[in-house]
Amino acid sequence: MRSAKDSQFIAVVDDNAALREAIESLLESAGYRAQGYESAEAFLRSRAARRAACLILDAKLPGISGHELQHALCLSDNPVPVIFISAHDDIEQGLRTRAFQLGALAFLRKPFGGDDLLRVVDDAVQLCNQRH
Image (cartoon, rainbow, N blue to C red):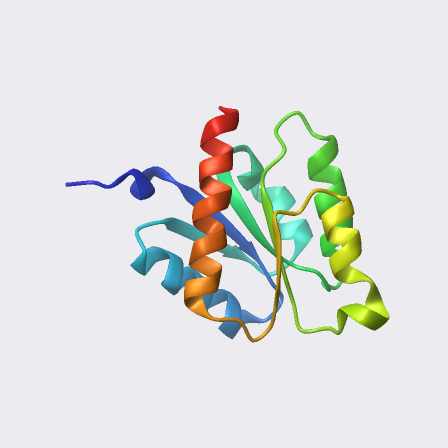
């Protein structure tokens, strides 16, 4: 029997392959479909934003930054709920403040707990379902 989560696609954009794969595995073990991308550019080329119920996004990426990607998605006709993840100190960088100004649903500092991530993913998916 399929659960409601089985049809929900979660995209993960992080340049750290090990973390990206761990998040994908966590999401899949919770019943979501997940796909990772090593950069914002790879994510945009895939056109995954059209089908993603949620985007887990590293704030600091080579090339197009997480904030730049979030801003572009906000301007699109199909904005996707964003959960930021970052290992960087927010006080110096202002990353958290900027993420929330652009509409992020959550900002998790690495390392974060799997339960914490799943909780905010569930919230993001609910929001996405309410929008559609």
